[in-house]
Length: 355
Image (tube, rainbow, N blue to C red; front, top):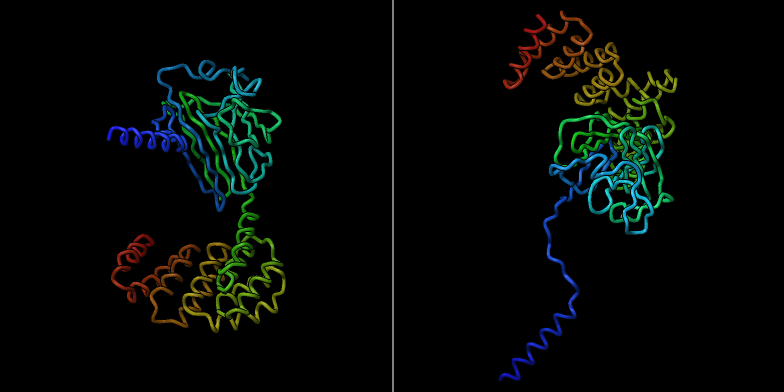
C-alpha cells in the first residue's frame, strides 16, 4: 500500500511539472486603466497604468528631467513612459492631426521628455514594450512640444479629455500638481464619408433612407455633390418617397438646376407624408436657416393636414424664430386646441412667454 501511494504521488508531481507556468493574479501598485473618447465618429483610446504620488516629489525627482539612463534594457537613454509598467499607448481610429501635425490612424507607444519648461510628447510605432526600457528614437513617428500648466493636486495619474467638439478634443495628463495636454483634430467630413461608403455596401445598402441621409449630409455641408447625386438617385430607385425627392430637389438647387428642382418640388410635396414635410421644414429651418421656405413648407403641411396639432406647432415655432410673435401665438393657439393633454402645458407656456 505504501508503495502504491508513493507511485501515485510521483505520477501527480510529474504531471504537475509538465503544466505551463501559471501566475496568480496580483494587486498592482499602479493599477491598469483605459479611457475611450468618441470625437464625432472617431475614437481616441488611452491604455495606461496609474502610479500614485504617495508623498513623493514627482517632477524632476521621481520623474527626472530630460532623458535618463535606466541601467538595463536596450535603451541607452529613455524618456518617461507617461505612466507606469508597460507602454502607455494612445490609439486613434482615424488619421488625425496632433497640434497641427499629421499622424496616421493606429496605436502608438506614448513617451514624454519632461523638463522644468517645455515638454516633448513622443508617439512611437513601438507600442508593446515594457515602459521606456527598450525605447529607440528610430521608432519615433511624431514629436510635439507642449507647455505644462499648474493644476489642482491629483494623487493618481489620470488621462482625460476636454474642449470636445464634433471633430476635436484636447487630451490631457494630470498628476501631482501638473497638467499637460495636446490637441487632436480629425477631418470630420472625410471620416463621415468613409463610414458611409463602407456602410452602404453592406446590409444598410438595401435601405433607401440610408442613401438619402448620406446625400443630405453632403448637401448640408456643400461637399461631395457628385457622389451625393449617385446616392440620392439610388435611394429613389430603391423606393421613391417624398423625403428622397425633396432631398434631390435640394441637390438640384445646390448645383444650379433651378428649373428641374422646381418641377420636382411639386411632385415631392404632392406625395410627401405629414412627417416627411415636417422633417423637411425642420431641415430648412435648422440646417439651412431658411425660415421663409420652412414657413411655406409648414403652411403647406397645415393645409394638407388641418386636423394635426403638430403641423401648427411646427409652423408656430418657425414664426417664433423669425420674430413674428403675432403669427406664432396664432398658430400655437390652434395647436393648443388640437393637442393631446400631455402637450398642452408646454404649448401654453410658450404662448405665455410670447405674450
